[in-house]
Length: 237
Image (cartoon, rainbow, N blue to C red; front, side, top):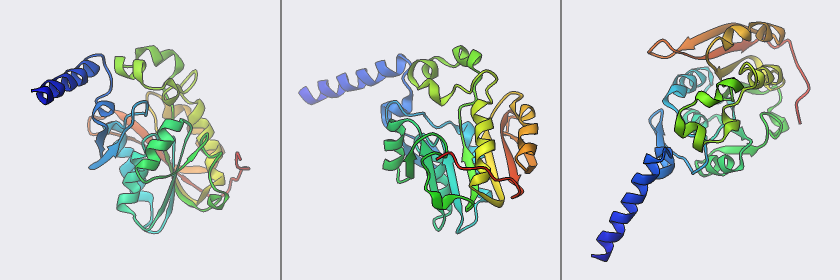
């Protein structure tokens, strides 16, 4: 009887947490992404199915024995996807939030704590086939319109992309040439009119073959570009 009551109270507590808007992945401890079970600790950005097209495109650009960087990895779901399908490749990730760093490491990801490229090993310079990331891209003025559970529970740093949403996106475009091989790919999630706003930035840092892609519903999901190999900048270490 005591066990039954205890289980009932536990279930009631879980239901109450969900009714308050807490993400389901935090309550059950995991979610599914690209067919993988991904551990998601409380406080860590919850993977969205909308990011799966980005992960699949990154996978298509990663050679069997290639090297990839997953920026703002969160739980590590995109890195895990690449690792699962390209087991001979090296996949490294970076993340600013220490809770997410711990979560990604628990998911088996080689993750480094730091801002974008700043904490990554020097041996990656000029040696990377794919840079991919779900970096913050929500315009600051739009933050208040995020869904209740997003705005209340998740870290705003995972979303806020500055005035027009492109502040972090521009930094990634600017800094990734130091790490990419000639012919390497940069893939970023974005939204709205941000792809158009970044055209000059891609051109300035010698990216070509810029492809904007959408999901099955026709909603803009991201951009893919190829690095020509001409432009190099100093790493942000």
